[in-house]
Image 1 (cartoon, helix red, strand yellow):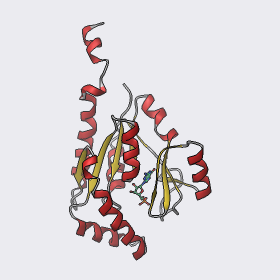
Image 2 (image 1 turned 45 degrees about the vertical axis):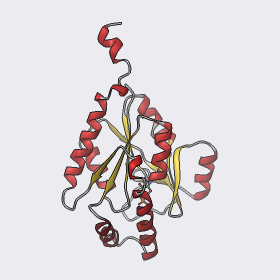
Image 3 (image 1 turned 120 degrees about the vertical axis):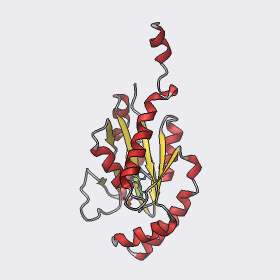
Image 4 (image 1 turned 90 degrees about the vertical axis):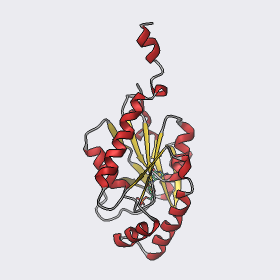
Length: 202
Ligand code: 5GP
């Protein structure tokens, strides 16, 4: 059986990275797709682990050369999933988790009908605002751009298969729910097209 692509989206400040990291820590059959980006590394981010940090010129070359499975421009910077982070894993039966914004998620769904799209949200817009300001890593202008972007992203809610609410202090609940969603996929009839013939021994 091929691996499944799991897309985790949600506004900046929804807790995506923490949820994804905790899911990965459970040692399940997941590869985390490391994206390329043109934005500058934040403190503590490691090149090749959190992102592969490249220049705009390199990214644009990559687009021309078909390096990306999907890519998007998010608040003025490029972000993209290299094909090499996805297809070889799926082909060898490993699930891949992508932590990407909505435009990229739509591109993934258009290419792979079996991809599972999950939107992670904070409990309210107000909490989102508090979390973004609390991070203290971005300028006011960047925060406002991210908040506006969050509004646009939530408008695509119904294009996603599932949504999860990341309530303050209950992140492990979220991780558990995401794990359940992941585990359920193996029982989908559409993910097991060969089952009837195997069952019948033909
Ligand atoms: P940040 O700068 O906060 O790390 O990421 C900004 C946004 O870009 C987040 O919503 C993040 O999930 C998204 N993102 C990260 N990597 C990719 C990618 O490869 N493709 C797309 N489309 N979005 C990405």
